[in-house]
Image 1 (cartoon, protein in one colour):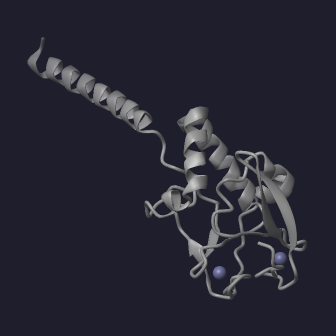
Image 2 (cartoon, rainbow, N blue to C red; image 1 turned 180 degrees about the horizontal axis):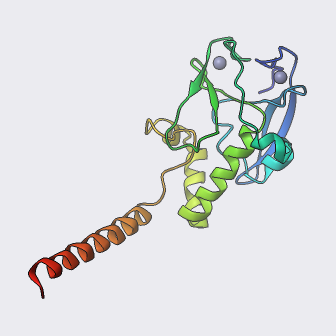
Length: 192
Ligand SMILES: [Zn+2]
Ligand SMILES: [Zn+2]
């Protein structure tokens, strides 16, 4: 974090940008002044407040709508020079591409990906998690970051899992609908 890093795409020195994180922390990221890509060391991406994306990852709408052209060449970690690998998480929305260092777990985001990811995180937060629950988890995560990075193979850098109640609620609705369909079919077949 304190060391200067070079952009894996442009090979020029990146500048440091501070981002507000929940709750009340500042995280220093590295950003390339030429391509706008952002480097997040391990643990840095997730806690940054989604509202910060607008400011840090300045992209115009036209650019956001353009399909992302990933660099053809193999990219290397600005920290430890190990390989950066495409991080495929089925829970992430299409169009968000992470490159993750196979060694230090830092994440490289091309210009626009940071905003897209944070927009997604914001939605997830609003729909799935009450504020207190979010804060509780975040506090937990801050105290024990490994809890949210190493407990699962999916979505590990994306977000804590939605609360169980939400999932149950959806299952109940689904089984309710299923019962209704079965009842209707029975009525049709048996004629009552
Ligand atoms: Zn660059
Ligand atoms: Zn690395």
